[in-house]
Length: 418
Image: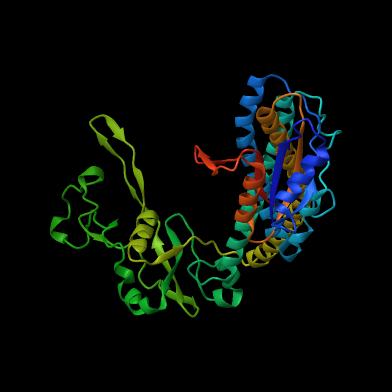
């Protein structure tokens, strides 16, 4: 729904004459382009000409910023209220009725305060609404993302699902889960189409990770009695292999798209310390698990970060239910917040428009303050016709000029949509 606010000088005459002139210009049987309403502009503090000119430029930006915040609150209200979005009101009435029956709120915005202070008061209040909305929507989005992630894990395939929700005690019966100092069970999810390939190569995965070399007295009896090499003198990586324990592969579970296998791997290897001269160099522990996971990722085999806990399924269900309760509560709170603050932001926006009309009228028509303003509710599809009719009736019968890409008229004209 589109509206125009227009103001013309009374030129020393009665306001009723200006009102009739504005009515005949665009809201009469001869020019039926809009419905017209009286528009109250209170007596505001004028100040100096320089301050009015500075304020005029600032008001255009302030008007645009506040409108953006009004739209933001409105859009969030529609998102949360759905079909009930029409319940967003201004002072308990629909926005169009508030605009058409506008009255200055003297208690909230004292009209005798300097205009710059008044604009600062209005814009500061709306800025606080915007900041609060950002915080509320950010918190809601974070909580909603956590809920969606939880649902995705619960309903997804074995690549992403929470395995504690999927692997029941019946499924895990007979599956050895190890996590000792040197052995660890890993669960690997693969596409069903890759089952045969995976089973054929699993014991060769990462076959350059583990070093199996070292002193061997048993296989070459001819060298018995000779000095044995230890520490740095031994090439532990002369013979290499995979960390996967032979015979440990077991298919645990599958769904329509994915299969889940369990394997046991060597977690790491200790490289013994040694003396270098009189100084002892401490031994180090080599981590095989990280390297093995990296190799699996390169093959597009997903090693799941999973620690089996038979009680975790019920805990996850309760956590997901609690998240849903929290999201619903936050949504209800945001619905109430939008209903309340939409009206506040809209009231502030309309008061800024009134100040704009006042400032533009004083700058255009001079002092003493003597002008009449009206509100046009534009008929559907009649925007161009209304502007043309107003220019013809209220202007100097010249073509509308363009100034810095903005329309210029011989009268005050503000356009906006509600």
